Length: 77
Image (tube, rainbow, N blue to C red):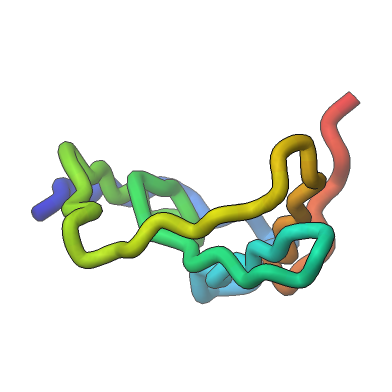
């Protein structure tokens, strides 16, 4: 289980934590696993994750991956 802390939410973000869509360049879908996060004024810290129920996904070596969060996120420079 995780611990939670509450902070002021960012005014330009949706209230609900988005679920990312991860996909390889060749169209292979890669499931996302929720880990620690801060969103909407709440922070949740997960000490460990159980990966036993997840089958590894194989993609081509050197292939680009895309992550779509379903919202506009400014690029870091």
